Each structure stands twice: as structure tokens, then as C-alpha cells.
Image 1 (cartoon, helix red, strand yellow):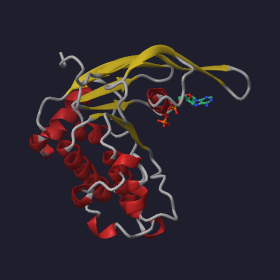
Image 2 (cartoon, rainbow, N blue to C red):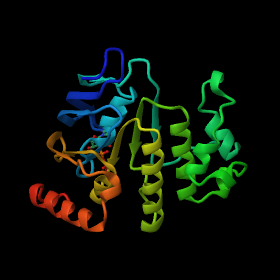
Image 3 (tube, protein in one colour):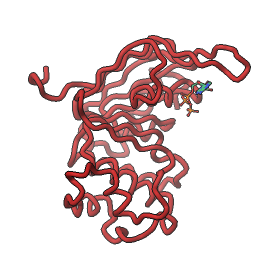
Image 4 (tube, protein in one colour):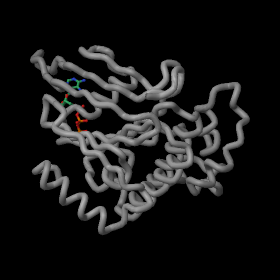
Length: 245
Ligand SMILES: Nc1ncnc2c1ncn2[C@@H]1O[C@H](COP(=O)(O)OP(=O)(O)OP(=O)(O)O)[C@@H](O)[C@H]1O
């Protein structure tokens, strides 16, 4: 149990979510998704295309309130940071300005040297988004998310559309920056390898309308997750959840 008044888990209980489709037909996106993410741990949501992953994140972010169920955020008045597939940087602002704009006024002058350093952005602070590759722009989006010291970090496919080498480097950077500033994190991905590398807990969803198909816990420290461990873990998961690879 967390101490009274301290950080608590993210608890998600979505008992139903229905959209009204363009033709007026009801589209049941989520049937029943319930899971928890322990304080300062990293969880991943994985499931087939169109099963309701982004909808779940939008509900958690408060962008969609039309659902049945309830949510418990890690801190009632805590900050939530979101990293989307598109880095969403302001093109007329430098890298540093883009990151600082996310800070509350009282923290506007805060020292961000270490954060830029750990994300390999120290030399990029005066660049503009148009001068950055997608991989670099995603690093800036990560810097902006961590800069606000969020109590909850939500990531929607942050490595999609990158070549494997760039994606691998970004995953390692995320592990490093998150390990130095652990916060309760929930990521959506299609990529099980990515989930296995980063997560403490993987929540598998079914086809739409989404239900939780199973929850896989990973207790091996990230520093011990070498190639051999990854392959063994992936095949154990594939055996248990056929069709997820
Ligand atoms: N605004 C909307 N209006 C109608 N239907 C919607 C709306 N948003 C999502 N849906 C439908 O709800 C279902 C879940 O969508 P969602 O984007 O959450 O899936 P996803 O798991 O994130 O998909 P992907 O893996 O392809 O990113 C899909 O069938 C989608 O077409």
C-alpha cells in the first residue's frame, strides 16, 4: 500500500465505450478493460489494430468522457504528459522553446541541461523542428513530456515509422530517462518486442470490442533483458497468447 497522501496506482476500469459511426450505427469499441499500473512502473497496452487502444488512452487523458466505468489517476492533482505518434512541435519555436513552453510559469527558468543531455539533445537546443529527423523530433517530444515531471506519462506508439536502429536507440533513451525519473507510465504499441524491452506489465487486449485477454508481468530488471532473455520471453508469450506476434 502506498503511504497515505502518497502516490497511488493508475487504475483503469472501462466497462463500455460505444461510438456512433458515420452511418448512424453504434460501434462498440470497448467491452471491458480493467487493469492497474503500479506507482512509478511502466505498463504497455497491446492488441490488434482497431481494438480500442487509442480510445483507452483518450479516456485516461480526459479527452473522451463519454464512457461507462471509472478511472483513478496516480495523483488527483498530478500532471499528465502525453507523447503521440506525431511529435506535435511548434514549427516556429526552437527545440528548447518547445520544451519550455510545457512548463508552468513558476518553473519557466528551470535548469533542463541534464534532461537535454540524457536524451542526446544538448547540441539541438537552438534548432527548429524542420531541421530535425523524425527520430530527433520524437526525442524532443519525450523531453517535453519529462520536463513537466508528470505523475502519469501516456505514450501512443512513440516509435512507429522509425527504422529499427533509430527505434532501438529511442527505446534505450526512453528507458534511461524514465529510469532516472520514474513515473507511472502507460504505452500503446503494436510491437511486442518493444513492450517486452520496456515494460513491467503488458496488458493484452482482444479484438474489438476490447476486453483484457491477459496480463503478463515482467520482473527481470531492464539491465538484464539481453537478446537471449528477450527471445525466450517472446516465445513464452507467443505460446500463451497465440497470434500476438
Ligand atoms: N470518433 C470515432 N467515431 C467512430 N468510431 C470510432 C471513433 N474513434 C474510434 N472509432 C472506432 O473505435 C474502434 C477503436 O479505435 P481505436 O483508435 O481506439 O483503436 P486502436 O486499437 O488504437 O487502433 P490502431 O491499433 O489501428 O491504432 C475502431 O473500430 C475505430 O474505428
